[in-house]
Structures are given as C-alpha cells and as structure tokens.
Length: 141
Image 1 (tube, rainbow, N blue to C red):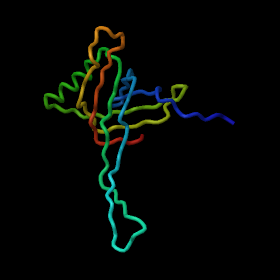
Image 2: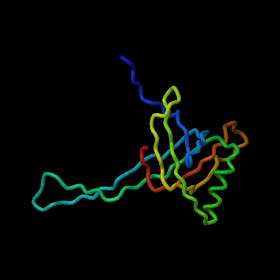
Image 3: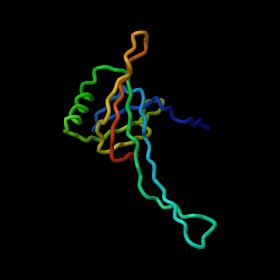
Image 4: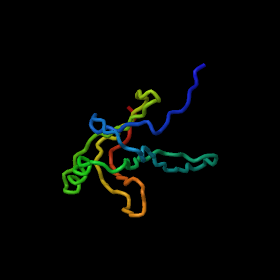
C-alpha cells in the first residue's frame, strides 16, 4: 500500500493575475473566520442557538528575501497615491514532484502594507521584505 504523507508547506508558488511570481519564502493569513451570535430561546435550557453572522478574512502576508521587487513596490505606491488596482492573488501548493495539489485564491487583493526587516550592521541575516494584502475573501480553486 502506498504511503500517504501530509503535504509540505514549503512547496508553494504565488501568482498574481495568473502570472507566477514565486520567490516568496512565507505566506501567512490564509484564513477565514465566521462570527457567531448566541440566541437564548425562552424555555430551552439544554442549549443555546448559534447563529452565523459575518465572515472575516485575515490579510495575506507574503515574505521573501529582498531582491529587485520594483513591481510590488510600484503597486503599493499606486495604492498610497489613491490608485487602487485590485488583482487576484493565488497561493499554489505543490507535491514532492512539483505538481499542483491545491490552490487558494484571494479575490480583489491589493497591497496595504510594505515593510523590510530592521537594518542591523552586526547581523548577517538575509534582509526580508514583507507585503500585506487586503482582499474580499479566500476561496479554494
């Protein structure tokens, strides 16, 4: 019988509008949370009703070693200047052979935060760039 191991989280690609960017070492915030409101019905003492209200989505954060990323920087600068361009951002999980296993899409995404790690002369670590995206929700594709 073939062994079925879990997929490894380091095998992924990132796409914007169906163009693979790759090069990101970490993706955070692929999540959705539905808020719940409790309702107590008179005479019902063994449970309370749980009503789904609103679903919220965390911002997606992409991190990678700083390189020539003028396109991401320019996209964020346009947002700062009030020219918001929304795009579909996709995170693609691959198996050990490099085949696509699963894909998540963040619709109507745009960058809301751009940062780099602190400059420190005594450190030999890679300088990490981080870009955070707001979006209208994550869906599996």
